[in-house]
Length: 169
Image (cartoon, rainbow, N blue to C red; front, side):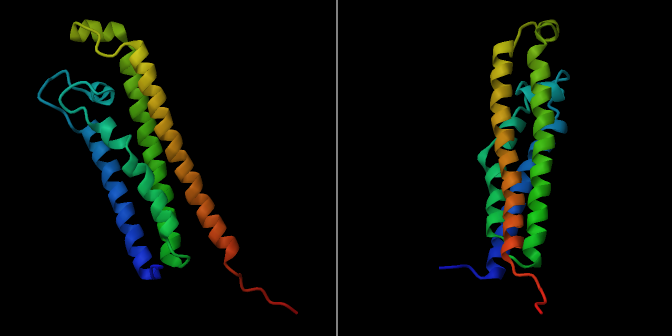
């Protein structure tokens, strides 16, 4: 059973909206989710320390990585499909930018044992844990990069398979 073009467009838009919500919520949790503790800042939230430490779990999850790829796959060859393809690429770029900043902020906090010791009285994230998190974040970012390439490839493949209006003599 194949979906009609209108239904495919609707499903793709819903998938993109779901991914956009995940990315926006992760950004909000990271940058604006200040808790009651005056020591709560973006570096601690990026590292997963404090009251509002869910940004990493929200961003580095399956939903914001897979949904845009599914949307690009389902998008029809019509004009709405091209718009969905552009939005898919835009979401992946936003994911990658926010993800890189979040991962680097977490790594910066994790690699600064002296600051943690001075401000917290103990080291919450040691260098080993910071490296492990950075590697896992790199895997998620690589998957998002693959999704971005897939979305570009999907559009290129559809354009090359669509017959152009050529005049033959």
